[in-house]
Image 1 (tube, rainbow, N blue to C red):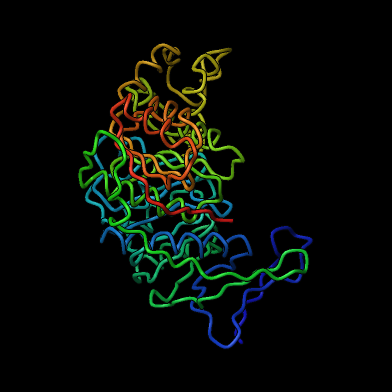
Image 2 (tube, rainbow, N blue to C red):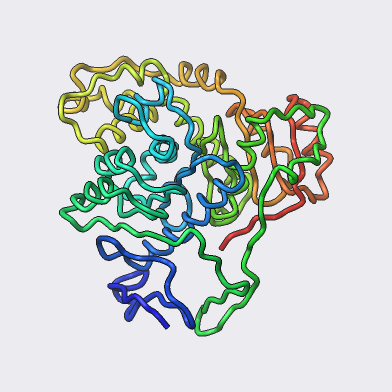
Length: 389
């Protein structure tokens, strides 16, 4: 049996703490730092997500995890000029895996503050340099270039957590966990999510382009590793809103939809034109943008913009925000369980959803399909539930 002692469990009073394997070697190596209990929970869940994304799409993938759910996940597609500005990306050519992580973190930069990063491919210098700029707890990847490792070892005064995992490792078919002294046992969820799951189109609109299929796969795989109930909005190969751990399906849809709206509002011309003072910290910049989007008058009231912006910004009114959100389109939505009512589709439509993937199986499936048909939305029933706890 191999084991790795941890500082403590979920909370400082929960000692002793360790990770271990009976009858085998741990499939991971800590190259730097000392990851904790929650760090490893994030690392192992996020690694499964990016590994599955790479297998399903053939593209490099990355995820940004917080408290055992993804704040964002993305494929390694090139960044547009606008995305570079919104995600605070460096200038110049960037590797696909660097683009994947920049986009994953850009999905929800506030929730990614202090994240755990996961990479499907070897971490290169481009990715390491971006990680070095961000507030992050650690990273897991199948490998690191010497230059990338050197950069990461300088982060957090040398204490940044760097974990390398064996990409060929396959877990045992049975998994166990203990709650309140009682052991639970179930089969490992090795369900492979692929395009074959997207064949059952149940709406009048059956148009499903390849890009939308990739977005559906991204949504479903993300949901597989998100605390349930969960709903995920995706656009152009990246999540733009993840609603996790809600007791009501409509609350998931609203939460994720609100995050998608904020992602889109960060691209509003007035937001892009905010003129920040020199040397402002990246988290302070993100907080100011979020504050401006939520209620721009908060930045203009009593000179609150001073020390953040070079000049008092113009107001971003509710009417302006509402009009901008109407321009969001081509969004894909995934749900880890069926939609019980058409109200979920109504809310999804407000955030530009055109494609939906969900298991189906509600006694009101007809109502949900009818609501999709009202808006020309394409929906498929996967027949597969993706609960994760």
